[in-house]
Amino acid sequence: MSGEVTSSPFKMIVFFTFFGFAALGVVMFAMFKGSATDNNYGEVSMWGTIPEEQFNSFLTQYTPINDSVQTLQYTYIESEAFDNSLVEALASGYGPDLVLLSNEQIMRHRDRMFVTPYDENYSTRDFKDKFAEVTESLLLPEGVIGMPVAIDPLVLYWNRTLLSINQYPLPPSEWSQLFKMSQKITKKSEAGNIELSAIALGEVSNVLHAKDIFIAMLTQAGGSILRTNNDGLQVATLTSKNSSGTTPAQDALRFFTEFSNPVKSTYTWSKAQPLDRDAFTRGELAMYIGYASELPLILDQNPNLNFDVARLPYLTNGNGENFTTFARVYALAIPVVSSNPHGASYMLDTLTTEVASDIFSNNIGLPSPHKSLLADEPTDSLKTTFRNSALVARSWLDPNPSQTSAIINKMIESVVSGRQRMSQAIERAQQELQVLLGNNY
Image (tube, rainbow, N blue to C red; front, side, top):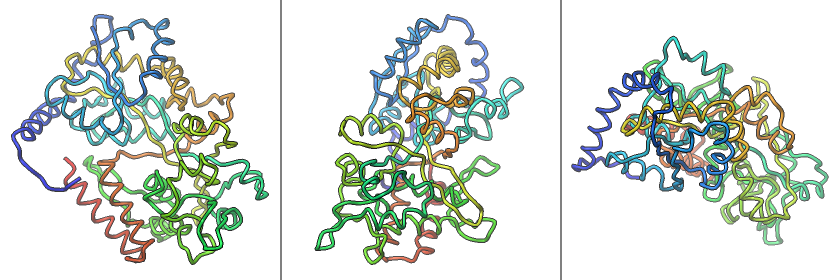
């Protein structure tokens, strides 16, 4: 995406329309929030990236409990097209009444969504007592930008056969264990080409979640990519130091790039390898770092694959052990141009109840954000891993997923290629992030 700013009539209309609505958003939401308590709310249109089959299955199971959801009209939109479709629809005044967004999308549409203000009836304390810690990225200084409905944690998929034949009964619980494992598992041809890889780290073009994996390692090292200041503005923190005086970003970047250096004994991944998830489903990659939501896709691509799922390995450093992982949080939000804000508010409250959340979470195969539901250990072993990962997960409101990916990926590539020293690459990424944040709205 280009950083060039234009001033076409269409963009000016969009800006002033959203600015005007957003300025009144908190006040208007407070006015209609309390009145949506009866059944006179009418039809509510909703857009989301959850496949229609899964969402309709949820509605079928939940309707006997609360038949009000019969008035909900759900439209599935592919993730790649969602942002543009939503912007165009809201600009035309014919957008949905309710949207299901991930944390990767919600900050992009911040000024287009109502914010639930904090008051004596709903405080940050109420939110934190009700929902898992990973959802707290939805808390803005002025209120809650969305109500969480699902958590999609980053986990470690591992090939049981490949680890077993190399005398590893279990996957690594610590990142440091990968040093020896990569040497033992990796197989190369006589020409030095990698034929079997231990794990996909160090590259970006064929590592699906390179940015998120780096952020997970960064968080484990005690750092962060961004933080929100007291004025509600996001500021870049890549160059920040921790309490011991080290830069967590350097620790995370050093480890991430360790496995793509051909001169090192840990070398196990290169640009010549296929996409990491494809390599895993073909049995050419022993361990794949992906999201819990990818489980159906992996099963579909290779029903005979002998694999299991584990929590993301943790980092041990001077600050002790840090078991955190990264997660996407899915939340419901109400556009400021909703034609039925009363009905949307009622439906949002309905869909985020504990009962609805339990049914929804079982249908999409992801952990519920409700602490009360996370307290119960699932009987399914895979869901147990997802739930345990959700409990220790962290997240952030990404200001612009495509641009932050480009910045982080360029930082990684510049180190791997030797174009820049690690400190230089991090400093440049810090500057580019700050420029992005300054031009985000």
